[in-house]
Structures are given as structure tokens and as C-alpha cells.
Image (cartoon, rainbow, N blue to C red; front, side):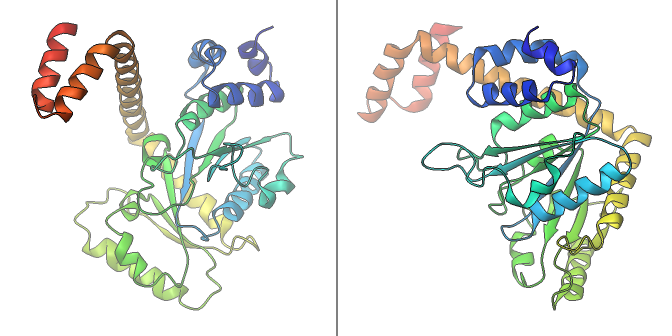
Length: 309
């Protein structure tokens, strides 16, 4: 029985093995993904993003428990900073989620960001497919937490929850042009702290001033993840957003767009690799000429593409 067959037979260790192969860009992983692809498209994907220290891991922990209470299964992919020593995830076993590890209906995997500026490692896209084919009802992606460049989550998640905390103050204004605009739901975590109501007001004001037309106005949920306060409301708002997407045909359209973008990325990566492999000496020569200012980059590109196509 190969890896894909084992995953379809609900073998958790095969899931972990395949995700490891995906991270290593092993050819066996691609063959397994080819077999699994027709079994994907059934999981709801929830993205949890926000600045460092917002309590994203604690919130994911409690949200997963709440989803499990409804009898649904949950896959969790937590993207962490990459260790400079091992190349793996710096936080490894996700200490704050250890109480979930014995639950058979939950699978947790930490992945190193590997320098990704979008908050999600490239391997996370395929890891979602693996958990989807395995049969998880929900897949939660927690981004690395580096700041306003973390917008790749919108390419992967059906629903994006942006986690903020009181005390950011002017930071809300500073990041509003970035990740604030990708939120389907705002979670004001650590809302037992002073300033929570002010932060809620700032978010409401930001939406009022936004040029964006909201077909689904992002709700704001106050949570205290370490005690579980507000998590039931957050889970409710996520369900409402997913229902809205399904009933209005938006989920299907979002996923079609996602498939096209992913295929285009795959195509660009493959064509680039082929060009580099077959034209290495020619490219070296053109780079030398560009450096010497004997040819400009645009003319060099014309020369190369005429020879290839």
C-alpha cells in the first residue's frame, strides 16, 4: 500500500510522512498528491493571522476544541519562524497546543516559514490538500505572525480571522492598508485588558472610512483565548461566514480563482526551471553583458525568448 492509499485509509502517520516529503520537495510527494487530488475540495479552510504576541496559537487551540464539540475533525497547520539550525519550525511541537495531541480527531503540524514573506510556507498549500484528502472537516492555518505582509493567507483560506490585541494603538492605523483589509472576521483577543473597547471602536471606524464595499461586513468578536471566553461566539461567526459563502456561490468562485492562481504559479515555476536548465550558459553570457552595460535587460530578455520560443 503506498502513501496515498494509507492516507485514504485514515493512517495519521502516513499524513505526517507525506507532509515531511512535501517540505523536502521529494518527487514521491508529487506522485502521492496526484493520486489524492480527486479526494480534495471538501474541507473548510480557516486562516488565523495577526501580529506576533496576539495569542494566535492559544486561540487556535480553543477554536479547535470548540469545533470538536460539534463532532467535526480538525487539521491544524501552524507556520512558525524557521530555525536557523535545523531549517524546521522554531517552536516545533507547539507547546500551547499539546492538550490537543491525544485527540484522534485532530492533527497538528508545525511548519517552518523558510523565509516566506507572505506568512505561509509554500508547502502549506499542499499540506492542506493532504489533510483535506485525509478527511478533515476543517483545516486551520496559523500564519507566522510577521506583520502586514502576511496577505498570502487570503489565497488559501475560505475564511480569514485577523487577531488583534488592545495596546496596539496607532498600529491599527499603520497596518490598515495591509492585513486589515483581508479580514472576514476580527478577533480582539486579550479583551480583558484595558483598551479593548477602544480597539473595537477603532476597527469599526476603520471599516466606516474604508473604500471597500462589504457584502459581508466583518464582525468583531472579543475573546480571551487563555480562558476560552468568546470562542463560542467566534466559532459561530466563522460558521455564519462559511454559510454565507456557500449560499451565495462565493465559495465555489473563490476556489476556482485559487485553483487558477495555484496552477499559474506551478506553470511559472516549471517553465522557469526548464529555461534555467537548458540555457544556463546563454543566461550567464547575457547577465555578463547586462553587467557590462553592453546590453540592457529588456533586450537580453528579447534575445533569450526568441531563441526559446
